[in-house]
Figure 1: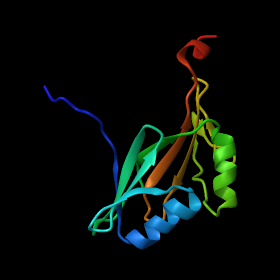
Figure 2 (figure 1 turned 90 degrees about the horizontal axis):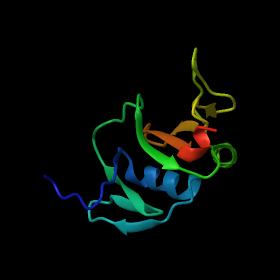
Figure 3 (figure 1 turned 90 degrees about the vertical axis):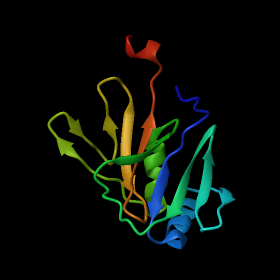
Length: 133
């Protein structure tokens, strides 16, 4: 069996400079490591993720990175003021309001695309004990 120490997403960027501007200026992240190929690692709490130069294009059809925040609604407001447009969804059991969806279990979620078309989720988790109340 594998002895995995950690895992982290790798997010493709066709234009690494543009991607860095997005993550650093719009999300306020600071690079913890810049790689020789221009890729950059961002640390987020106890985890992190890599944005790397790629010739491939993001589909934007599925979540490629989820960022847990304390308050999704406040985070969406912050992103909007930074010029980031939240995705809107309208399905029978899954509808966003002002970019935020209330999940059946009490959690909230939101999605937006980065400068490269990667779909990123915001989540705020509800403790398991609070869900059953």
